[in-house]
Image (tube, rainbow, N blue to C red):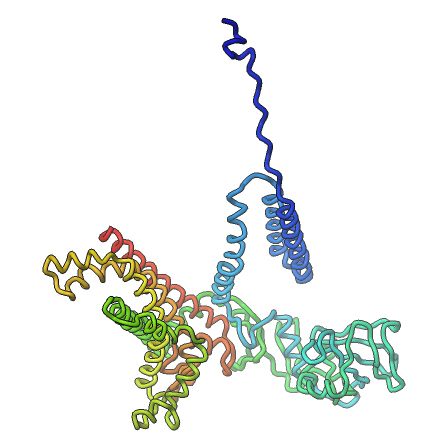
Length: 532
């Protein structure tokens, strides 16, 4: 029998490879648009990085953009194509903020310590500018490079002797070409290319900003004298490079630069308010633990923070579970209607309900006192204020626990409960030995997340008590303050922002919640293994 008859290799023909599926035109267009958008965003972000000479950031931007283009323009690395967007978003919105907060915690960043040393010197000199006899006078026009109501202010001034037109802001003064401006007969500028001239009404509404603006010059600064005139005043305090100090030109007093604290300090300890940002090491962290004026209220707040989180989480869980158990029985009629009514607090905006509850606890006209005929000053005492915020959180939080407990109960086979009753177990015994352990396997992760949420429940405190009541000796730390509201008050309080110190407390909060969550999840895994 020949090879042809047997269908051997001599007669076999190679099968053609299956044709590749035609790529979707819509998919290709979408891919091109997304990659084009990526390049556009990269180009847009590159300019400020170049302008501020942030070369490391620019290098990261270039490498990331090139990596994305390579990844999506080649057919390889398919899993990375799906992981890359989520990874980038994770870095931008999670990793980077955490790292930035951590880096800020090791600095003195805050009011008076925001910029560089050079910026501090300029601020000190311009703040000390006063008008003296013979000060140069200018015709002034107030303008902006943005919106007339909110844009950055610019002084357009005309030198009466040389007719030179200049534009100045907090960064300094620069000349303008004569062809780009129109100067009126009084010397005031009526139009300038790239600038929006403020009319009298617009300038009047921003008079406080105009008065505060000082344009630094070599000998002092230019300040406004009304809305149409300006003068170049002389700085009362000047920086002396030889001693690295600020010298008062009238009294001769000096403040020497102290790089450890980022401020100019005199021999008697007097410190100028304007300083600069420097690294302070672990001082923000040790300050929390060693400074008695800070450590005592911090530890008191930490204890109350744990009590609030545990009471809120535990209370809402118990109440939600009891209601879920009550409506789980098939003998209850109208269960659907009851469940809808019970989840109404969860459906309403929490911030609005918190404000309503704050008014309900009002001493004079609140519903609580009127209903019970009492005159309790709920927010006036520490114990009553803490009880009030826990009750409010109990009302707001139980619907969530009710919903998840209802779902978990419905997932437990009824045969288990029936078997326990046949074996002679009581209703309580069956619940404690069968139902509750099975519920905890499903609900423990939710309880951990609820604890973490309540530990940082800013709205529950700030919208009801704002941390009050406050002791007379410490208006920055109230009886109902959580660490998160205490941190917010430190960072943005009226007494001056301390971002570095607030960032250190944020790190403490992060570590506390992380440790508690890690321990709880570990116990959850043991619980799952036992009931597996």
